[in-house]
Image (cartoon, rainbow, N blue to C red; front, side):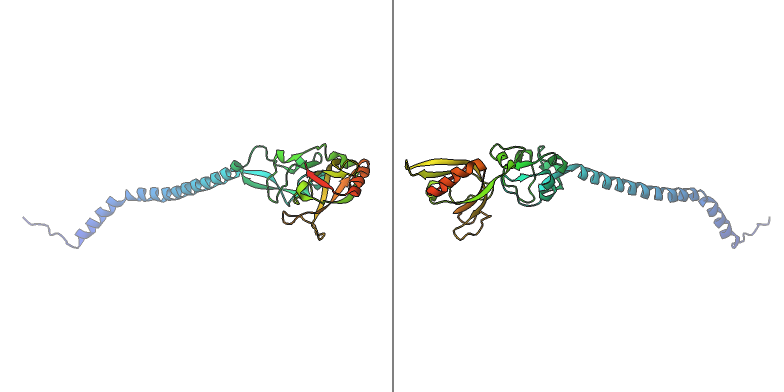
Length: 237
């Protein structure tokens, strides 16, 4: 019998054809990978954006609007609705660090004038307890007043020299008829404090020896009497 000779050159070609036939199914997997990779990248980007937005929303939720003083404000200062924008502004702070009675809008302060209960420093948050709509001692000046000056002659019996603008005082003097210390005018508003050289004192430094004060018309006579008697003593309320 004759044996058919195998052409060695054709064998590799047949093998290659067989290999190619076997690799055809791989094309479907490659397409799947091409589709999945962009989808995965998109999913990761969406998740990242969501996390960032969630953090931003959370941060915004934690922030709270509060009213703060834009400058130093003395105690017993009277602020009219028109002056609110001059003395206060609104900022955002960590809401967890702010008490519920903090003012959050300037509109809440513009309904009517008010007095300050305490000195309020620049940047200090304003709370409801820091201001009051009326003050029996100070409301009397709304209808007008006179300004006069008094000097304190004896510190050890009265003021310690630390009184400043905004203080409320009672004015005493020694009655020459009885030689007793007598109250002449009460609830007097201090408009300015000065040292022995006449320099105005606005900080705690220095010792005040004279003051400019508000006086109602009905109080002028008694105030002048105390000034004339000398030996004035003043006591802070």
